[in-house]
Image (cartoon, rainbow, N blue to C red; front, top):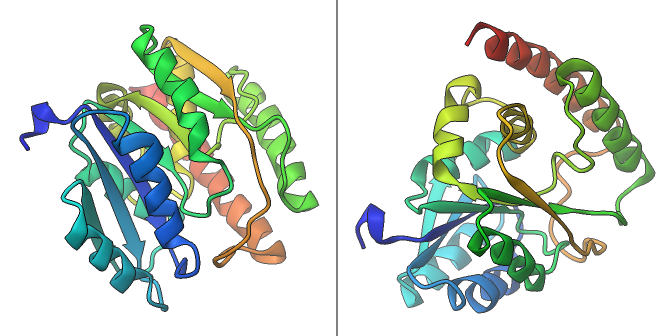
Length: 239
């Protein structure tokens, strides 16, 4: 397929998800690829140390709509940027591989895109995450309002559909090593007044896979991400 023929690219980073990766891919096939003609799934294997990479290659061999990008482990953010760079669709759908947000909820986002919205973001009103992660979400919400003047309830949700031209414009402000590119993208879209729909989605407990950032490491991760957020604000101001 040529780049212009692809309507939607699903971008999904994966790290040590051997127990659930087949179910995650099957859900994309059923609820997204079979629903949207001329769509593709780009899975980024972020240096998994288990059999995730091999399982993905096996799945890709049976479905031409699936492409696998293998890269050394660099974290979720850089993996997501790699997937975005490889995506060829007119629209892009960002998801995680942990199956915490059911893919059945994609239909609600895609309905908004068909209705004329340039972007549609999921919103997790009820979170099944550790208390620290939920507290950080509240802190992020307040920080984004104070630093950027934007009101985003769930800016870092891994469940976003948007026109690729918005990402192309945002890309100049989001370096390859950005820890939370999905968050930065949401800020960019809000600052440029992108017509965005916000759709409530379900959120489940993680059942399989590896939580790559825990407790103290999560705090350190957020401290580094906050420094990047300040650099991002400076970049937007000088644009």
